[in-house]
Image (cartoon, rainbow, N blue to C red; front, side):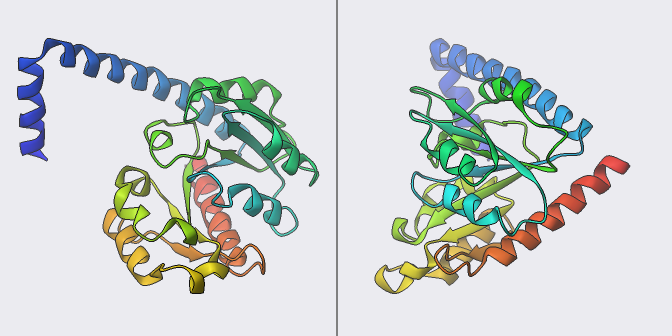
Length: 239
């Protein structure tokens, strides 16, 4: 780490433009983090626990939310992020759940500024839990705090077990790792033990859950984890 810092500082010395770039990125992120803190405070004020769901496209985030509708013992609302279309928000609404679609256009992630647009519409008095379904991408969403309390990171069996090692920034942020499409394990070379080991190398002790959205296997474990985090959050608020 120190060696890396030395190299970066050396690069900056030799390249003033790079120094300017780093300053700009720091400014953007600190502005974003201040806004995220405001969003979190708003959730805290209403005793709502917020979960940020991240993964690459098509790993099963929306399907998981649809399956949680009948089983999660909390009322919840969903803030959806997609580049285009309102398809995911409509899928959630069809299940009778409040959902707000944010279209990011070209942006490959949600940031706090975008999420803030949904806040005036959010049904704070009707729900106990919020899910922010981030744009499908294993890189950019990891760098932006969106005002959530916990991060759920999904990786699907067809993507391969190497994704955890390849995208360490994302998996270091995970409070739970959910391996989806478990019904495909026999068709793909996905080593669950290896994936679990790699996840825990990046985030010691992180829960890893195998989820089959077709049969519902693994869903109860996710619900238990959500309940645990909800309790943890409420306890923190009481301090």
